[in-house]
Length: 171
Image 1 (cartoon, rainbow, N blue to C red):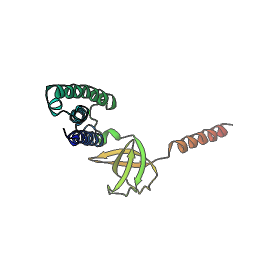
Image 2 (cartoon, rainbow, N blue to C red):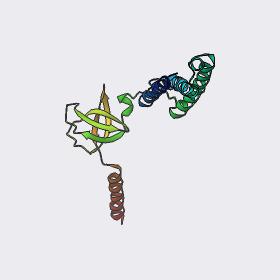
Image 3 (cartoon, rainbow, N blue to C red):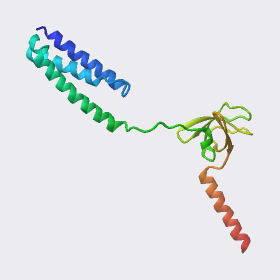
């Protein structure tokens, strides 16, 4: 038997593996890739077309494919734990804080704010520059209304300064 047949089958298997790696979870090509690669190895090892494509070769390839399928399922299950899809509605963001990533302009929704890991279109009653800390006070459809607030450290420092001033007034 021509060794190119064995190498061709292995090449098909490798191509399927590469596609699987590039598109994980989108395809399930590891299993047929294993089938073709196993047939290619059998073809190269035996050099016998009748054995490779006969009952014995196909049974060996199918057994390896079954093992590959079980292992692939186990690996995907471990790597990508199934979680219910999450949706965030703008109303659930009221009271949450974040940072301006694109200047917020009054009466326009062209501004952007990052709340947690998501970016939202935002508007405000006054212009808020990039990098400013904001709180969501309302939501309108697919955008949020924000107000600029002090970042946590500054707010804490100001609160401490106020306590010090109040203590001094009491003396």
